[in-house]
Image (cartoon, rainbow, N blue to C red; front, side, top):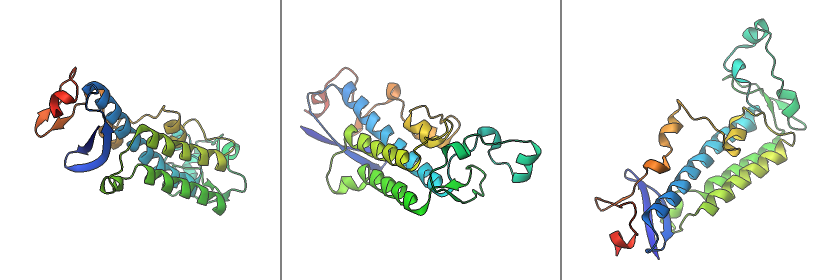
Length: 208
């Protein structure tokens, strides 16, 4: 077995354990899946905080509009009440992104704890603890976030809500900074001591 320290630039990301006889292509695909999975968890945790504080995402045509503009255009959010959590509290989103029907405090705590657990699952601190990361760790984090969301929002989330889109793997990151962080598996490569791991080789051809 061999343990790889995965970096992006000079920044440590996670430790990855594999067999030295595994194909380079398989290792790269697995590492990329973990790397991109960590990004997904981070994005969901960010949006989960907004969901916790201000409820579900407004329809795209209502995003960023003032109350007066919404009235003038006669727009209505058909998902707000339909997806509102039981016992919701009103907390207006000054950014104009979310409907303002937030979960009650006890349910907010459910989302908060799920987010903390998920962040811990994929934390960079595991490098210092010499704990390797796997796709199972990423899946565990996503399952925790998915489960908490279902508990707090039993009626589900609108199809355009970023949390739901991420959990359904239909997120659209085009035009965002997040899109620049995601690694395309077909273009991914790994380097070690200034040398590129070649497709078609085994790790042992480079680390033997």
